[in-house]
Image (cartoon, rainbow, N blue to C red):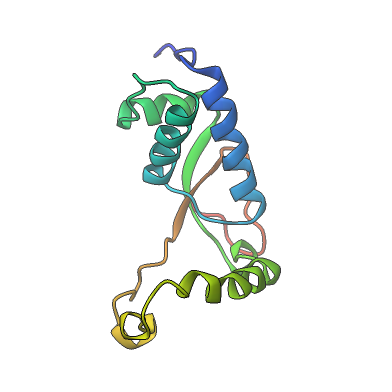
Length: 135
């Protein structure tokens, strides 16, 4: 049996787990690369210069907080209509800095065929609603 290591930076882990919980409340899928990237951003803001968010660090983080990767199931795991509406309101402001020539519809390009994630990091005891749970 492996020993679970204590977090080297409890303040960083507190920020990261708070972000993770916010993502789960909004049903936003979050993967390992996103967790590692956010950890590095938080480490920089908290002035932790020697953090290495490698795969080993990610596994230890997941073990400490009972996080697993699981297949998303059914419509209940969709992002809320309110969150989509908020995104649509913010989109014109984001697009302001781009020339119309540089803006294209992703549906027209076909680049995002099957690009949406079908798995996400979730808490181990988190239940699947409205469909068959897949592990």
